[in-house]
Length: 339
Ligand SMILES: O=c1ccn([C@@H]2O[C@H](COP(=O)(O)OP(=O)(O)O[C@H]3OC[C@@H](O)[C@H](O)[C@H]3O)[C@@H](O)[C@H]2O)c(=O)[nH]1
Image 1: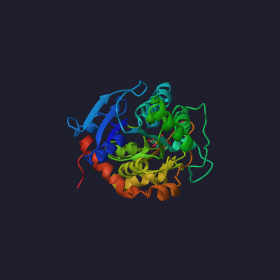
Image 2 (image 1 turned 120 degrees about the horizontal axis):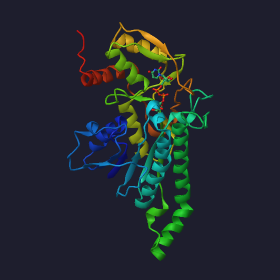
Image 3 (image 1 turned 90 degrees about the horizontal axis):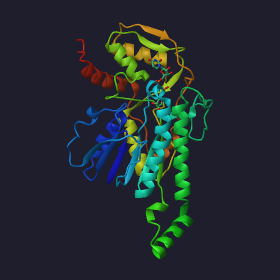
Image 4 (image 1 turned 45 degrees about the vertical axis):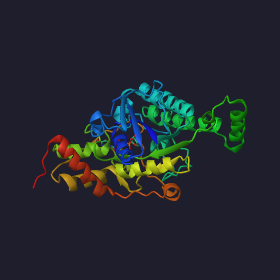
């Protein structure tokens, strides 16, 4: 199987590559523009005969012969995706169009990593995939959440337009046989959509800006933990190995999705700060700071479909995942564990 992973130098992408490379039948191509990803995350694969790394921005077309595309490319941390919002929306819209064009041309199955942000500031809790969301279309987060919503729309429009079931398939096969003009692959686009919730784990950028990495880095640097007001907003945190397992199950299974992949354990930001303080540095202070606009007040995945359709359930609890990330951050920051 030849597999393209866009955004494969990012922290989720590189863990996904590790898992895919475990299968000796897989050849993996990573395309990344290194805006938030890093070659370092993939250093153990560079030079491997079944691995290839390309510096490529998905807003430009790419032509490679592959069987599957994991389309992850897009900055995911609010500080990074808000840094250049026009580029973020281009990545989501033009980048997804380019990858769908590639999938169509070569007959590859394509998986989009969408986001829990499509639910916006949800009025339904927990969020099932059937919930259409409550999103501000003109806010500072819109480049990401509306961008991903358009990306989902594009996935389904390509799927419907180029793979509308048996009738279309039969016509395509007939045309194929009789005229030998329309290639078989042109007719079918197999899509998969994962809505991923806040994910954490080793290799996350130390200055990524997302809350788990911020708190761990602050705790290790003896700096106050910055809880953004009011601190009662909730999130559900998924450990990266669970996320990768869910993505691969979705790609290999029969369901298009969208399917929520996230850990349903729900925490307020104050609870998260208290847990980090207790586990990593009991001496530090917890400081309330100003928040940014449109911050969702609650978020928790309904994972009924992930359980039923993918047989997937997260295994790593937050209290077990945080120390694994702490160990990785200690190594990278050069902070020794106090005895
Ligand atoms: O230092 C900080 C950083 C963040 N926060 C708070 O922590 C919460 C989570 O914020 P994060 O920056 O980790 O990211 P969010 O959960 O808002 O968004 C994420 O969710 C889903 C993914 O698809 C994306 O990776 C990302 O957009 C927010 O309420 C934020 O206000 C803090 O309290 N302190």
